[in-house]
Length: 458
Image (cartoon, rainbow, N blue to C red; front, side, top):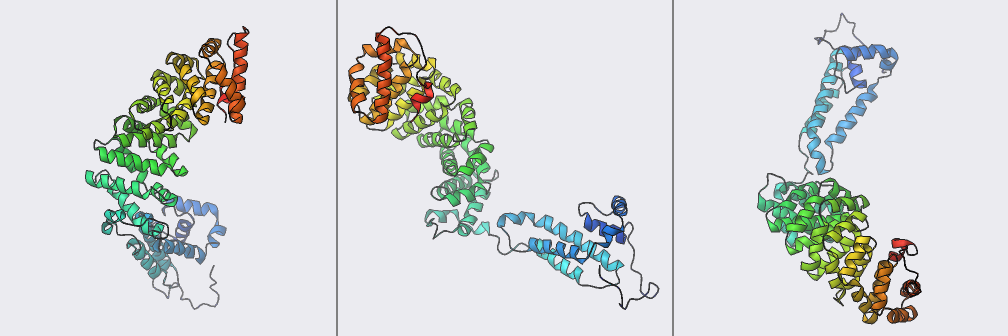
């Protein structure tokens, strides 16, 4: 507390009395500073009285200095996203100004605290010059902008991001929303730091409604923008939380060819969160992914295969894939050599063969002859995937072993066990052991060594 000793203070009779406001005493005002969330009133006076004089006597000018510091921080430069907080800062300044005047009314000291608070209140209420003028941002400039880290630091990119988010608002014109989605797609394409910036800007929930747009260009831009954003790991949870999974499945079913394959990739990225895999399957993603295996481009087929493989780590999704007819196109893709789809198809087949329904479907679709043919004359890497799939088919089913023997699989398996990669040799030797048991009348269904997880291990 400021000492009054030796001060030239007029007595109460000598100094003019300031008008007293009802319900405000020095105790009340001090209590308001100690408890800023409670307005001055009877409850504040009771609390101050309960706390005793010791707390009040410890209230010094430092409390007001602290409040002034808070207001100064509010009035100073800040991130553009904080502009929206100016109204609350102005309210805080007004409250402190009222308290300052109360102190001036009841104190024998005159200070310039009221003037300082008036200055800070005016500063908090005035828009800062460092806030970007979004009306002056032309999103078309992004088409020719060099977005490399050296040429486009984040503080230069940020106004464009905020302008895109504004243009994605529900009240914006359809053309503006379509353009904004295209620009976010471009911004999020290459740089991790820009993807992170866009992720925290509010763009993700604004993009999700466009996934159901009847405008195919807007839908494709939104799908691809979310795909690019999902490449940043921390954005995946935000995309999931924004409810994007089901709309992405809708785009997978209804979009353009590019929208479908990009939606498959976006779902693949989101399936990196293990809990999302069951959700993606339950939202109906498996059937349109299977459709891509037959009707998609080479790239679309690869994207669908990779996503199916990830989703089929959940047993229920394996059942969904078999029910959706995935096995027939998978067997067909085994014969597409040199495109990269054959290997992926055999990996997914091996996954589906870990359940009884999948094994039956593979046999019915002619999968065993196709796999044996691959071991006979396929490239070395494809031979390896083929023997893995055959081992999965035969490890628990003696009838499938008999089919394998009838298809003439023993000679190519022997050759592979002698000249293949270390992994291929091991798998071929294991499968030959099952076939020897079959010829010796071992029969019966049994689990292979380590089960499905071992035969799929790499």
